[in-house]
Image (cartoon, one colour):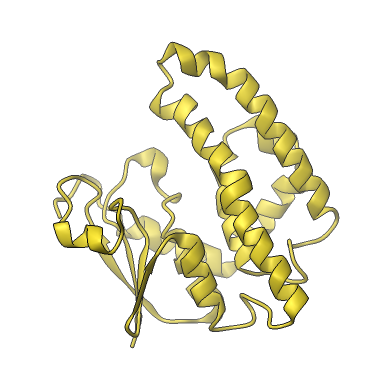
Length: 217
């Protein structure tokens, strides 16, 4: 059976190319795994049944031969089990990739979410204006630690993996900030990831799926 990934059929311009169904699309493209998209509306009301698949009505959701799961990190782990090009079989190499996958989602991405909140969703609020300088400084320190950990390596593990899919897509959320341009090691890392043909295919497919105007469920 073909894997089915759920994504949105429309999002605002600033979110295009950044919705998290990009992650399983990219993983499938890396190993040549066929997949089909189920596109739903991001606008309420969502079908009640969908909340049985994703409690918050978000994307992605994956269906794979009777297996259903949500959360992009869990989906990446599931897809990694299919091919050692995504998740190594050596115990230590596998542990390293798994740790970095969780680090991308737990130690880096929340800071990107908060930046988006103060710069986009709450940009006009006085608290957001006051929060922004210290948030940028704290996020920069966190990115410095990431850059140090990456060192001169090409990827987070011994080779490209699901950890890099997660981390590259997380770091792309700061591509409008001096946070990245002032850290060439991370800028080069993201450039290596986004230059991969599989990423290019995945993002082109996601962008092509978005309608120009909101579409009802």
